[in-house]
Image (cartoon, rainbow, N blue to C red; front, side, top):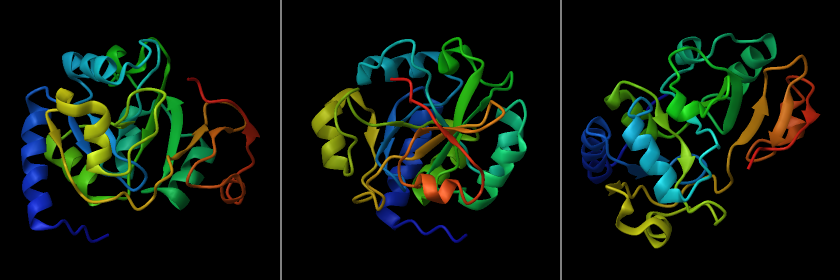
Length: 214
């Protein structure tokens, strides 16, 4: 997949990589909505995300990966259903809840044995993750309970100067949050129907309806 980033955005990405490496927060466009990121293994930066978003402290954070091959590092196992979904929908707007490996820190998992993982189909977050050399937190760049932003201006309207860098990559092409499927049980559970419909998911595997933990 060719990754094309405009020169001015590329310069913002380089700045963002430096901020992530130094424990800062970066807001960035994705294929769904704008995300708010920190290096996943920097506990101080992760805690800052909770404060900036006013996010409940017991809610785990999702992680964005640079490549499908990274699943084997951050998931303890890859069930057959997960492998099928990954092959069809990723990179893209699908988040999988999986048993976490020992590489996922407590600051991200908040005591859970699981982690939500996604490989985005957008050059900006992929460049950030690759530049940082590690997963980046992939939560939406909003105050918890408020609409997920689709533009850099909307991010600033909610988070203001609490973010060290907002990468302006234009309006997000998706506009709908990712679909979330829990693949830790015998039958996958659809926790949130987002950019990928249940009908599309069920062309790959059967799912039962569940409820996303808020």
